[in-house]
Image (cartoon, rainbow, N blue to C red; front, side, top):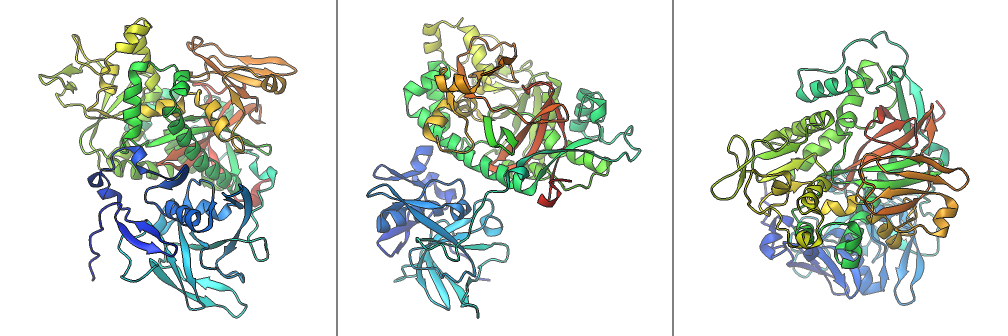
Length: 629
């Protein structure tokens, strides 16, 4: 077996493509050695134009087209999403030129300078891949790329690789895929001629409608179906008062179904929205006048910037709250600081289906646990991880479910309920009751809880808030805020998730991406347009449906909830009601793990506001043909 030579240093030139565009080594294991320690270090611009993340495949493709053609394609969440782009911008006059997709085997052959696209999966895992064709013949196709094997191109060669090609009897051009577990999608050409091009019609609106079903009675409804020998399941049984998903006995055998097309659209929406929320977070943290709207003490601003800038401070997971129906897919918010429903989605609804013999479609959360395991395995944790939770019963089973994923990933962990027993050691470190230094933390608390402690300690005095020293040693036992805000403690989810989780991000998103099909118009003040169409007033840092007002232009206030967030500033989001099924308002929750879709669930409530007491019913993914079933 031939051993692969070590990768060259991150950022070193590995080849030069036609037009003089250089490709760079992108083995991220060597990024820190190359001085790449902050998030902004990885963002690459040519002039004022963002090319992408150093030195990924999308960055190279966008840069090559920019340099050689003067074109720029829009930002995409994953490389394979390029295959669905419909236009590319000519920068000289901002004209949008048609961009056509041709599937592998099309009679319209690829051309030098076109984009070659690989599907997600296998060698290219969640992202897919993109390259630039440099030479096209009936026998082979050559192309330039980044972020493949990081190795230098052979001397005198202006391309990275060559793949075998074949022209079939009907004139179709076929490219061999270099890996059995990967899939070569095809190529993208800028052309007015759409003959042989792929058409990407959205699914019929009816396929986005959720369906409510009920399993036949198999006679096992009263039997136990969760395993109390497993700590997380025992905690769940205790919290729910039995082996059930819904607090309403009449819902014991009821479940929701979404079509495969709906699942694919949700996946596409979540991947795109995660990228948009990250762009908006970057924008806020580079514009202080925007950050002021988030009601975060200025003393924490340096900590937030430090958290965001550190490339190791990556999210593990978050949850989007969607309204999904034939009307379309709209996001309400992104819970990427402290989210719930993981265990229900990743374990309980699957066990429910097995117990009630529900074989209609597939479990919508069957991949969530494995995705969490993979995320923790790829995290930077290299010591004991402290799981910190409050005494809320739901937080207990949530923490234990996540601990199971950590252990599968090979991470040692211990659960701390509350902060009793924490102490300072002689060196000023915080240690747990067993004397273990706290260096790594995963929390169920929202970051806003730590901010509340700071505000209370400083009596909301602006001068005290400005001079507050986060995480400093003090008399008395350590508090939650002392643990979470210490420089030497890495917390998941990281401090910067305060920004995308805060609803003050929603007006920023709308200003940056007004054409996004998934966003609702949102403002920091009530505009005539929002008032005319109806709106939802939300506190910027509220949780669990508290202090929300839903206002219909004809009916007036439809619903108003109370809570402890009435002092927070308010945003106003365009009214887009949840669909109603079986007497319930249904909200689809979609989980993102390592920035990619990982599963879904449905929460229901008799009122139009989903709160901490709202039920969750199982969700199944069914073939499109079953939409009317």
